[in-house]
Length: 489
Image (cartoon, rainbow, N blue to C red; front, side):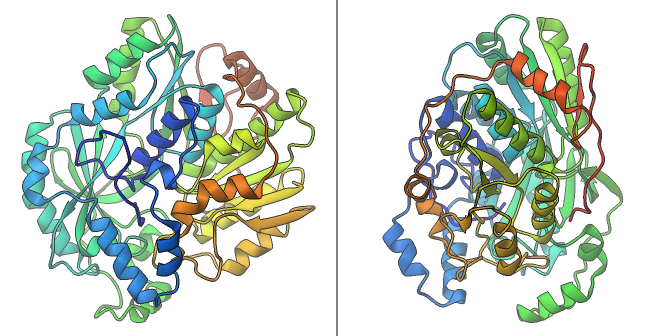
């Protein structure tokens, strides 16, 4: 998605793995935790100088935006390198990120920050279905999606010819990604099957008969079919709706005028079908292949199904709160709210903080946090980190909205590593998040051992159908419910 980041340190990642993607950042965060380490620098990215970040925060907003664009451009690959993309090379980077050792389980499938916190608590790895590769290009205005569509049509065929197991979702979002799409095209690849690298990792590292959890986000989006395995998605989850992206609104008109655009609504290619959302949705063929693999190798497949990326967040938060109390941590009553890749699973567990993940810093996410706080026991402390997109998009939640949510704490609520007067261009969030968490929250607990799966299942059985997540596997008495949620953008 969006960010101002540097290349990943010590990752040995292929050149075409972008550091600011949700999936790659979450792999790094989780793999660092499984090695007993925190992640200095946002999402495991190379730590930029906080001194430099403070300096950039003194610059005018438009200058900061240009620095943001330049930093992102360095993450994209030249068009000439696109045919070199190989799905198994992406998979090898993922599995090599994790310690090689026995695991009681693994997760595969959709991205979700809440899922990363859950995997950390269980002490298990996650293998993503979707990965992001940005490709450099010039001369395309962010409000001219047809031009980017044509670029993708030219570049995609060779990539797909070289990777028969990939489905390409070309995404163009001139709202939240307005800055980045000026110099790059967003290609998101969905694996249609596990592939030999993922399969071998699971066979080598899972205990015999271990369950494999499929993270199945069912979010879909209207798209234009370009060719077999190639789809163009205009817009993305956030503050603006699919209807606004394709048909406009007063909010869109005001936004385009504010950014000096020659347009007052967008004119994208006409969608002709719906597909799993490019960044978050799970492609069904991947699930079918996982079922085959589990059956052939004696593993049990367990599905967690939800409709929005952050619908897992209330369950994971309450699981941690319950687990802390089970362990006698009676004073661990603080909520640590992260957004997109601005999260730190290591320090959530080290400080005994309950993690709550929001996909972005937009109004639907603020509403989801409010919905959670309305339906849970109050927290003594609430800490909030806002991801910085560098742009004021349609549907951005105001700082006043976030401040009102912080007031819900019984004792204290505050921003963590975020300067609210610089939001959404406070690029100091990225280098300071880990250190600021260490300095701000004094509580310390030993890193726990992996939560036993039996403990996790006991929590699910006690929870009934309270959460908008459906759990599907043989022998589980509760399947959950896909319901009870506010409208999502």
